[in-house]
Each structure stands twice: as structure tokens, then as C-alpha cells.
Length: 113
Length: 221
Image 1 (tube, each protein chain N blue to C red):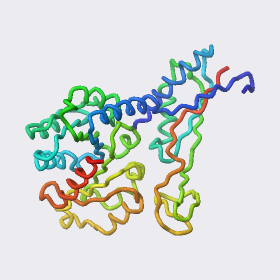
Image 2: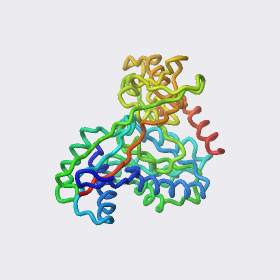
Image 3: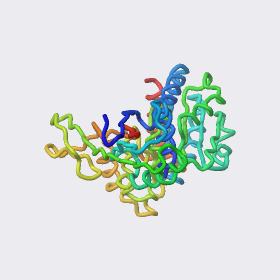
Image 4: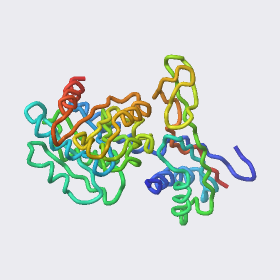
């Protein structure tokens, strides 16, 4: 359960950025959370509700964009979206760990009045 | 962009940007000292400290090793590892569930890095949170003991997919706990096909030569 410290990081990045453009409120924070980021969306939402009172984001929304895992099979030279925890190429049935996306944990944008 | 009297401000920044910057500084510092740095990760009780106790003893005439060890509370692990000829620095995270690059930077400043060629970082016992924090290491080594069950890699895939090395530990207990070796190795192989897999017992010494060989080869690279 490190989503509280992750939300603290998020707020410490977005608050100065919002203030820098003259905003005194953040109505929405959009984050990209990869399936392999090690972050549970429900826990991040809980942390947002717990930590935002008293910040610019108080009363705002958290929007979580889930980024699915996409892999690359070097043998077949194809991309695929794995089904479950084993990343098995649907063509050659060999496991791969060439991960093209799914590790993301990024702040996409904020919305200000 | 504007809609309903609101403005969207793009940020496009990784949440761990600050940690990643400090990790890059750590990596640069370690490289300047010619250090091989390993981040040891596992659940509590998988045998990270026992592995290091034996490694520090057996390799003391071959490598100059140092240890940074993280725990929520107590310096018990640093006490276990001291007196073996290697400098040891304990980090007490005060209930933070993982090590971050800034904690490692502060601990490293208290170690004689110029005297060392291998640095072990024993992370907080936890298979979830430490998985995604870069500390500036060269290799991430994940330990899983035979007492934990064969499906650990399926339950905690992220940490195994980020591993360079997986050590199956406490193999001397395999028969006593009915460990299904084939099933466990197959799970590790399929979740983490990129990882080198070794089977060891720090208590009996089984498999430890292969671990030492890996350290010696990696140190030269």
C-alpha cells in the first residue's frame, strides 16, 4: 500500500504547476496507470479522497486511464496484448518479456477553472 | 484546450520523476567507483539476510563488499551482518514500505565506496511496493523460498517481470514442505523468461557456487 505516497508525489508535482499558471483550484487530475505499474486504482482513488482536502484539488476529480500491457515477440516480429500473467506469443507460444507498454505511472494533465 | 470554462494543462510527467533523477545520480556515482550494485527483493523471511551472511563470509578474500539494509524498524539485520569484514549501513524507513533512491543516496554517503567493488542493497521485505522504485542498481535479484509456495510469481508478477536474477532459496527444506520444483521453475520461467534462475541454500551451501560465479562474472562487466 504505497498509493498514499504516490498521491503525495502527484500533488507535489501538480500544485506548483497549477499555481504557475495562476490557478487557485484543480478540478481534475488525469493519470495514466499501467497494468504493470504496481498501483491499484482503487487505492489511488482512496488516497486522492484522503489527501486532497486542504489542497488545490479539494473537491476535484481523479481520472485514471488504465494502460494495458502490450508485448513484442522477437521471433514472430509481432505485437500482442497478453491474456493473463503469462506473456505467451499467440503465434509461436513462447514466453516473452519484451514489454512495450503497461509500466506507465504518469500524470497526464490537470484541469483548472 | 478549453471546455465548460475550464482549461486543461498538460503535465506529461512520470510520478516517480524525482526518484528516477536521484537513481540516475546514484548510478553515476556507483559507476565512478566501479561498483557492481545489486538490489535484493523478496517477501519478509525469504532469506535475504541469510544469503548475505554466507556470501560476505565465503567471498571475503575475493571481493570487497558493502551492504545497505532497509527495514521498517530495528537495526537487527545490520547487527547480523556486521563483524564479517564488510561495512554495513542500516536504513530504518520508519514504516515506509520500500526503499527510495534518496534513502540509498544518504546511506551510500556513509560507506567507503572507493574501498568497495560490490554493494548489496537489501530492500524492505515486500513483494509489491519496492518493485517499481529504481535505486540506481545494476541488477535486481528477487528471492523466493521453497516455503512460500510454487505460485508466488503468479501472485506478484510485477516484481518477477522486473528481475534480472531469481534465487529460489532454502532448497534444503524442499522435501520437508513438499515443494513442487518443476511447477515452481515452470512458473518462474513463464513469468520471467528474461531472468537467470538459481537454486540455493545459504544454510547448507547448496548452489551457492553458482551465485558466486554470477557475482564474479557480473563484476567484470
